[in-house]
Image (cartoon, rainbow, N blue to C red; front, side):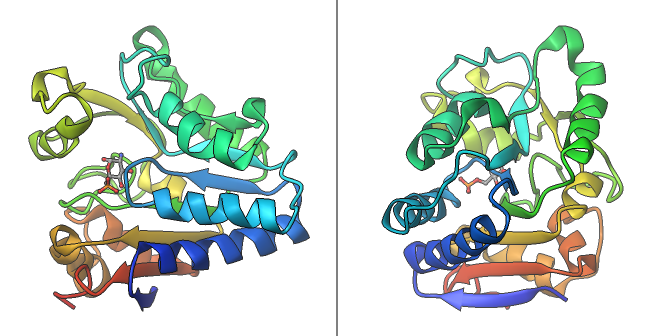
Length: 243
Ligand code: GLP
């Protein structure tokens, strides 16, 4: 069963994440961070950036792997996950850009890109701490309901719900939201040594209840966390309100 921590706000959750990662960096300066996009991890990245500065941590050897990327969106597009990870993680933390990887969503190579990504993660020794948000339908990364719990990194179709949820990043125009993505699989995510899932607000309450108290099922991909030996779910009161 996942450990559930209820906090007052995103900043408090961020401080828990930052402390955990700072301890990791001290003991393993070339640790591997699993990175996520979305709004949920932003306060955590900010807290970590402050900690890196205040504690003078050397992050030059820290490595990173992002969860997912839109298919067919140019990496230089401001809403590509490559751009987002650069803007929200690599730059504020001062990570070495070449050590931070994002799945390659280019259409001509996308069929083989997933295997290569999984091989790269394995070759780097696996992810030490994976931060996760959750979709309102229980997705993690872009593993939508129905995704195999053993899946590796691969191309997936985005659901209408997720495209609607993410239209806010594309001028509120769903037609601009890509229809496909490349995402680490649930099996890939489950190989990380520690999972930290963050969720805030009422809109996540149902998905969190399914994740923590529902049966383990591909209909709520995040429920796979129940099978992980070291999973931490950090949520506010609103996200905890269906528990
Ligand atoms: C996207 C990302 C997920 C993220 C989800 C929720 O679909 N692929 O990794 O968890 O959005 O985003 P937010 O944290 O903004 O609610």
